Image 1 (tube, rainbow, N blue to C red):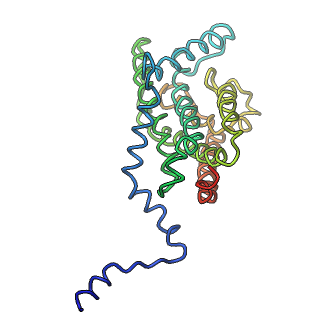
Image 2 (image 1 turned 180 degrees about the vertical axis):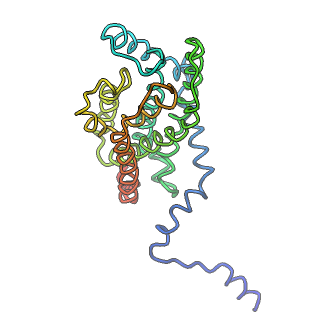
Amino acid sequence: MANENLIQDEFDLVIEPGKGFRHYWKDLWQYRELFFFLSWRDVLVRYKQTVIGIAWAVLRPFLTMIVFTIVFGRLAKFPSEGNAPYAVMVFAAMLPWQLFANAVSETSNSLINNSAMISKVYFPRLIVPSSAVIVGLVDFLISFVLLAVLMAWYQFIPDWRIITLPFFLLLALMTALGAGVWLAALTVRYRDFRYIVPFMVQFGLYISPVGFSSNVVPEKWRLLYSINPMVGVIDGFRWAILGEGVSIYWPGFCLSIGLATGILLLGLRYFRATERTFADTI
């Protein structure tokens, strides 16, 4: 009889109000294996049954760099930054932009694409859009190799600032994740966002300083222009990669950092507020 009571005590289950919310962030760590599985699956699926496979991660930014170099560098005669060749300046901006664009595109549809799993199994839903960001990060790492080859071709050597690049990479990931989780939650409720997001990404490419230096923007408009958080991210990448002769417009950069942080926090807050309805709505 004593043994039965001991066994019963060992398996008592206590349910407390709000218990799940307090342990939500702890659950993210406990489900880390699911995060790694979904990330690896998304990377494999992205280029499955394509002819040239993962080479698309190099071909798209490379072709975009060529077009922007011809249009803005040769035809429009826009100046480069510092001592860097125009092509290197453009590709240094393509790295964070490609990371942001791919991550937002993958993240916004991630909940819809995993609707069967979300409606049947419990796990922290934040794992799904977070794992989708890894796809953009993988493309970034592949393209970074091409940037190194491009810099070697032009015999351009970065200086000590290159060691600060991980900080700007983290800023780019924050911006992408913040926008991505917000759009992912909105897409579950309003399917129109499946068509709005590609347009937003395409439009953002042309209003961000990817094909040109942000220094061409008149001084009186620089702070307003920095409302686009990717302006600060791109300027930071160029400052770290191109080195000497490149400066950062600090008021705008600080504004971009604040906006990126705000987008991430508000995006996570909105995601958490609507997360409990995903299984019913999706």
